Length: 342
Image 1: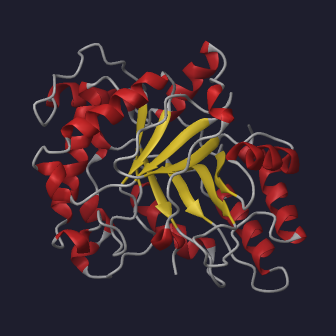
Image 2 (image 1 turned 30 degrees about the vertical axis):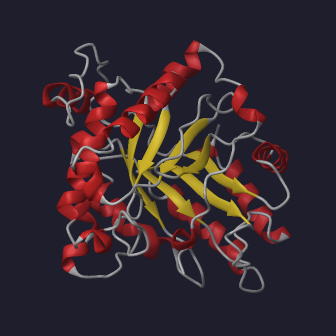
């Protein structure tokens, strides 16, 4: 079963959030990295205006390079951290000590009505928010516009680049915001995405990089539920992400080849959720090594975010990178790979 079906709720952020990203130079570099197809996308947003009666977007929106300015072959390494008995700050410190390096992406989950964070994460770390959605109808009828605007203002107020992955795994059948729970109508997902996006632009939340993240496999596998039917269009997406887990002997290519083939030439690709379970011997360590090799061979991939938890809603599943000495050694080797450099 995909861990996404039993997603952990958001939790209060620890003291690490009081420390801001250091230095204007770092902020500039991160803004370029996150921007995706910055130039034409920003222009399209300005021309399109916004939905829900929000104010028109600023004509002073910054332009960016036409092509994704991530560095092919360079990968941002990150994690969702929820380790039993530890705060987020303690878990982050443990991983920094074990890997001998900092994580570049800190992944957190927020429910639809949960207030967005008021401060960015620790220096050198990019916050990625997976924002749980709701049914499409309340978004499309305008009743959620105030909530959306408040979220936009909060993220704009961070004044640092942020990854925002709204309504992930929309091609599954386990969330309120997926197609099967909304009349089998992917077109309305696209309308909802654009509506939220346009409100963010109207509220000058231009530091937000929009991460569109389907599941690696569509459930159900009917043609109408194909992931591409949910794609909002290049002007509304900065990064294309994917969720895919190894619960047995799944090869990385069987999970991630398709997303790269479909979108890798258009957008930087993020593996936004992944992990593997111990299945005896060195099965998990071998899978981590195979993932490293697969990413090294696919320069379209610009970020890897591990689902690093042993607290997966009481299932007993252990996705931690240190679930065994061999797994930790394999993950440490991945983190030391120059492609995953800080």
